[in-house]
Image 1 (tube, helix red, strand yellow):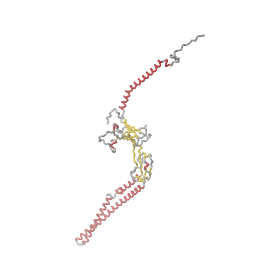
Image 2: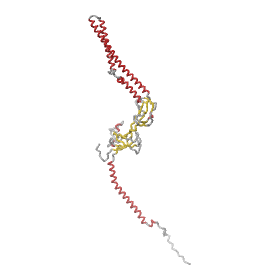
Image 3: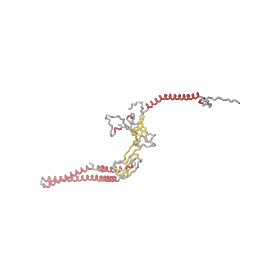
Image 4: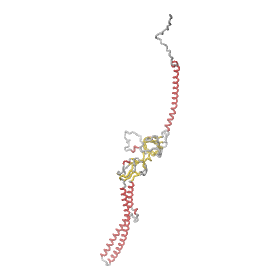
Length: 387
């Protein structure tokens, strides 16, 4: 029999060698360790350059910031500003019943356009009465002139009568001494002379009174007599009231609150019927702090922005600055005499005139919030010796 060759069996505690192919990482440990080291060195290099660049920019940033601060600050800006416009309460100084209202709510009206009218009947009656009184005054003046002429004529006739009486009296006195006439005839002649003299004096006084009524001029034209002028003034007043019964727009703008009146409503004199807001001439009422007005002067250019229209700008100039702070006109001014007084920065009203000639921009309405930026032309780092 042939003998079998037996292979030795390894002990149980010995592991069998792994004959599988090892991964590349296991086969090249040195290359793998070298790759991360290169990346890290590149990152460190970039960080170093960035840090160096930042440190290099720091002085430049400081220089630019100092320059901006020193040369800046010439713009005074305040957001305590509002659009304002001429707002008039439409009314008339005569009382009456509304007959017609010729405008509607928020309607654009032109200067001189009819707004509403009162019933003209009572005013027309008053005007007709005043004209009749004027005509009567003309007749009265002419009558006084004729009375004056008649009085002068009566005085002249009475003067002749007095002269005749004086002659009769003188004759009676002469004859009385020669006993040609009786005492009774002499007394009668004397009494007649005295009575006619009294009538002459009365007529002369009446002529003086009539001349005074004619303003010392017997030939005065009727239209220059004081009574005529008084009657003419009454006619003018009646005509004025008739004209004021028709109410027209004093300037162009937009009417509002028109629904507060209607035909048939009685309006007392000077009662506001509705309001008219001027849209062509608007301005900005700003209230900057007193510490912001150091270099602000009238005439400086202003840029205005309105919250309603973001991105749009209006240009104008500082028109005026109030001579007193706003609290000076308060109903209850602050009392600074108490022991617990605290200093508060005051607001000083300032008016800015705005150029609204560009009709492509939307309209500015009264009450809109705005922001005003005033170019004072004075930088922070430069002294201003013109104060």
